[in-house]
Length: 279
Image 1: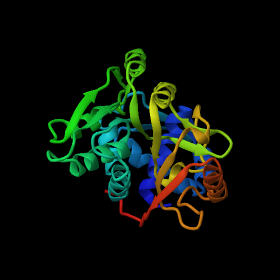
Image 2: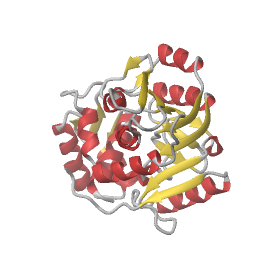
Image 3: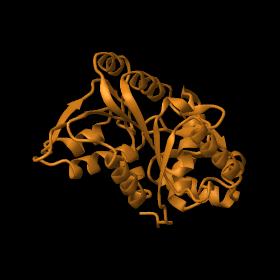
Image 4: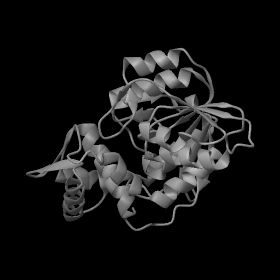
């Protein structure tokens, strides 16, 4: 697995569990404990986790409040390709609900580049402060910032205000990010608040396009969002002949998940995913 993907998955696993040992992480990632130690040291240097004896614990708020900015640098070119492929599925004049996350922030940037002043206005409602920043004052984009509480380190908008706002609106397309997708559990997330917002958003959209890199395939997270057939399209990366660049030992689950997605009627669109250096 490319180092940026491994760091991203390590962070999500620690945040999802609250605390994990070196042995647990090494087993789930299919790498040595020495590699896990180096990765955790790097995550700690960015204020994303705290190293403890024999493992690491999650931080509610990153020490430098730069969790989103740091993660956005990982696999930046891959996220840009995913963003462009997703933006290409959006037609002018429609209404789009854009989920939170580093990849959907790349979708926001791609939408801003795709739609100009000469296009029929595209209405985009953002569930992310970072996506909103990328779309603000862009010609051809009518921006709506959804209400809610900004979740520290993620800058996603969650909570009762976000759920209430969603209940008042209807969208042509929901562009959803996801923490994990598995053939048994379906779409799932590591945070209960994020999962609740996604469930509400799914009910308010005519179609759902999920955008997620291949490390999410074959993974089960804490909070179930929806069954596989809740989505219409998955835009992903690094899939070759049904095998992904996920953790060692997870290729079987990832391939089985891809098969299950297609059987559920989900259109799977893939982009290339060459190994990139860590920024």
